[in-house]
Length: 192
Image (cartoon, rainbow, N blue to C red; front, top):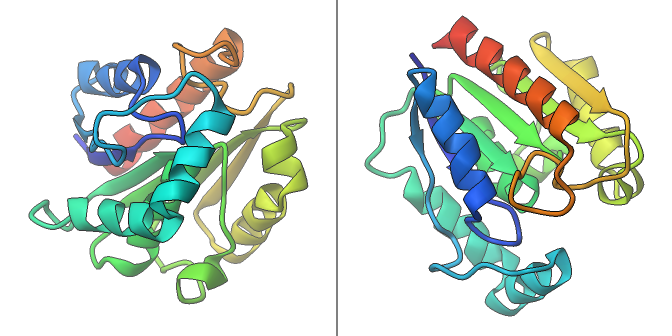
C-alpha cells in the first residue's frame, strides 16, 4: 500500500479534505494530512486566499516542505489547489518520490527546477470550465507536463467548479469527485 502526504487547499484542512484522506485510508493506504494553516479554515476561497497572502505563500510552501522531514522518502505527494505547491515541489525535488496527485491545480515544472523527475508517475485532475484551472495557466502547465513526462495523466471533468472534490464545500460535484477518487485509488494501487 502507498503512503501519501496530502496537502489541503486555501480554505484549510476542511472536513472534506479529511474525508478524502479517510477514503484513501479505508482502502489501506497511509495518509498524512498536515495543517499548513494552524487550525484555521475559511468559508470562502477568497477568505482563504487572503489569509494565504497575509501569511505569505512562500511561508506556506516552506511549511509544506518541512512536513516531509521525518517521513520516509517513498511518498506519494498530493495536494488540493494551493496544496499542489508543496506537493509538486516535493515530488520534483525530494529524492524517492513514488508519485504525485495534483488536484485542481498544476504549476509549470520550471518553478521547481526544470523537468519532471524520471520514474515519478503523476495525475492531474481539474474541471474543464474552472476559471482558476483553465484561465490561470494550470491547464496549460498540465498539458505541458503530460507531453513531457511518460507516466503523466490529465483528467478533465465537465463543469466550472474549482474545489469539486471537497465534499464539505458548495463547489462539491459528486459524480466528478467519485470518478476522481476511483482514479486515485487505481493510481495508488499501481504504485503502492
